[in-house]
Length: 304
Image 1 (tube, rainbow, N blue to C red):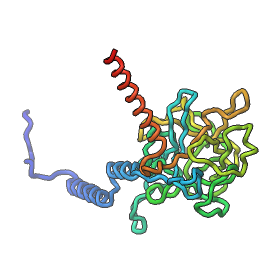
Image 2: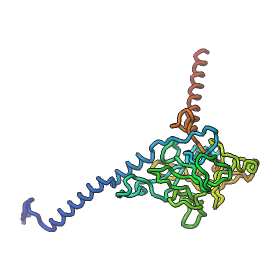
Image 3: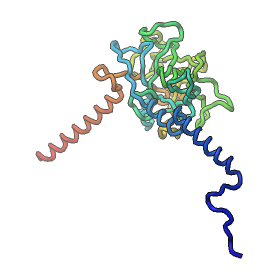
Image 4: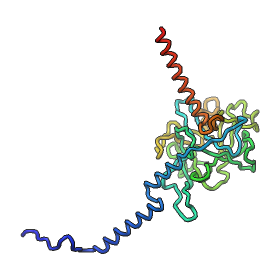
């Protein structure tokens, strides 16, 4: 028996009313989320637009580090075949605060991870502020073995503090299983750090002296006495690409001296160009020198 079509296309059968209502509610919710900027594609766009926004670093006129300075914390990785990396925020769209009447400006919520990014351009993601923990006023110099805190910038970065604590079975770094680093909203003793002089043989003599910018130092966690470290052999996959895992762990060589993993530099802006860090200036200078040498070699070859 041939199939006989009982109803035409205009006839509604089954739970047609529920289906129509469900489609209308879905469209209504979609438009409401779009107006609020809560769609995933909108959050991802807002994240990249805000977290990669350029930041002007502080300029040190006397060559020393001061409370209130906006800096980049860079691990150069000179001697162990690692690329340079900078302390940076790791975040995705789920870390953005939900929209509300009291919170019209988007910002990041803690806790957040940190990583070693290879981008040296100063931006919201890698700019940190030297913050006092003992009542020292902004503008005063930071001294060796003096406690301080590292805070993200105001606005989208949420003014979060770099913190760490003893590792446990459930709380440790993902790859290396060492002491974890995180950015938290609540400020307490876990957020206290101190700068230690680079050379162990001159460490005692330099205690209490001002910290110089753009020079190698160690950054020790006050509670655990573990130094900030960059791990080139542990790679994190982040929304911003592959980055080094950062942890709080002191790596010692055979002479009981800290290894390159623990060597950090507080980078500030170049006095002539506040939108460019000294690291970028050094990289540009190296590139310029290489081009200059190549041009000289070409001229010599042509003359010969």
